[in-house]
Figure 1 (cartoon, rainbow, N blue to C red):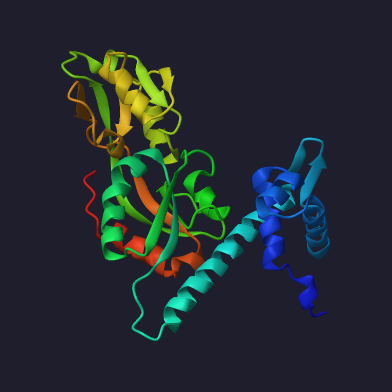
Figure 2: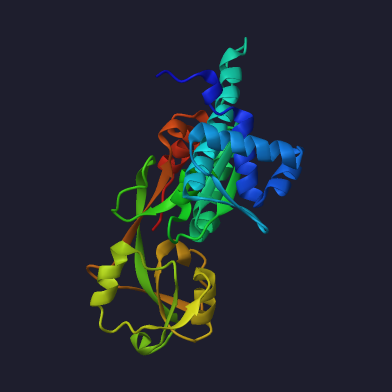
Length: 299
């Protein structure tokens, strides 16, 4: 049986689903959108009937997306973003004069070391070539679904991510940019750095490096678990231990730290980008990918 137009979700219904999920409640979602709580409640109920699934668990503390709701909200974010791109790129193509370069919002998710040391010069070149692009960077811990999850959930257009050989999340595309090597990091001048306690942080060891890590009998269990790689560098600099760290985390390492090669077979990890098939063809994402591809990575 063919679907009728009335059975489709309208953009305003998608925006309401996203607002309720983001604010955690019908009242808060209504306030964010400038609507009444009743209008939001009726809209969500109508969307649930159209989809045929309960999207939110209602309670005294607000509304939480169900598993079906999380899927619906992720798709809603991505659809709304594509509508934004549709308008921006269609207007650009329709101008009577020669079309200008890409313009509009570009949402980037990146983990800490790439946001600090990789993206700034790339974004500077992007702005110089395409001043109409407004880049927004969101720093996300590379744990669990990590930066790629931000793209899958519609919160980012493109992610700088660790590609460790596993399959990308369903519905995403991506490509590697460079391999990042790991080194032994220890207080400068220490006579036996491998004897020091290990300082580590939870994002450090991915599936690619885990096998190498487990085969090194000289590496103890972490004595100190730091919040991020910056804290690790500070602790090592203060003489509290040694660490095994990737190259981007060592870009601005202080002189009080010595960096030693780990020798043949040392671990590496692949840094790349992830986006959706639809956004991969958008002008703003293609512009950033060109800059990423043109960059020279000293890792």
